[in-house]
Length: 198
Image 1 (cartoon, rainbow, N blue to C red):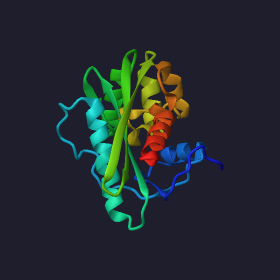
Image 2 (image 1 turned 90 degrees about the horizontal axis):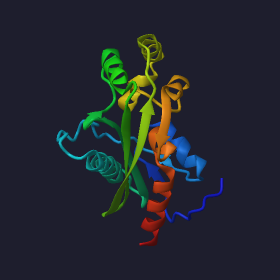
Image 3 (image 1 turned 180 degrees about the horizontal axis):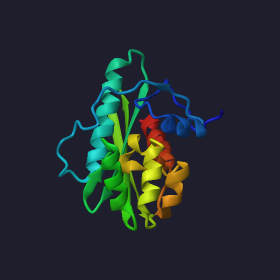
């Protein structure tokens, strides 16, 4: 597929998320996938503003993979989290935790932050996007049925807007849809465009 960008070296995605890889392909960015070994709980300072939290984690992931890759390449890291009333909601550890998160999000508006990091050798840059998401009121039976699919267990905030069930929980979004899926494409494009100019 044709890309609007000419990338001078191979692209590496420091994420095993099939959603992120599919989004990159959607805009013509072919990449190798090398999952990061960075623990997503690596940053324990949850007093950080979510904008800084996701950018730092994305950078740690990208730098970890950049250190593993021998050939000259551009490594992209990303991290997404959900924030409600200044509380960061990462991936749930248990179904009970997923239920608690979804109950909190019900009939509320939350923010989704995705940080991206682009690394080549010693050079790097980071960026972040915020999208506001409003849930309708969820019934407990709906939440339990969704959790039973297993889908919430690998997603920040315990939901995916691209899922069959997750989509019907969302009443309104303000901002970038792709940011909620896990990779804000316009921001990634603009960041890569500037990065390869330097």
